[in-house]
Length: 91
Image 1 (tube, rainbow, N blue to C red):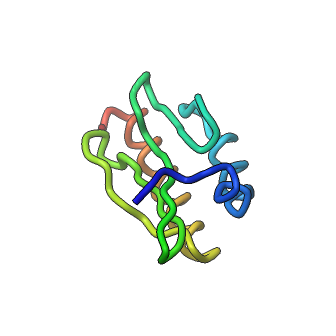
Image 2: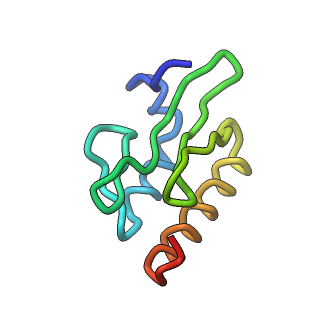
């Protein structure tokens, strides 16, 4: 599975805008986000559609499909929870 191209990221623009608005994450390259200096979230393209790899637990990447609005909303909710937990010392 290869990293998402610029063309693939266009379809995720609404999700990317939401991620960019979150405190605690920095987008260093298009679609590649860091948290506390470490890799946190990036996207892949696959014949099955786009996927996000994210370190919700602060340690290991987990893969999340982001093909539908519901999947994107779920990912965003999980990212927000991970950031809150990190601020509280949970990560």
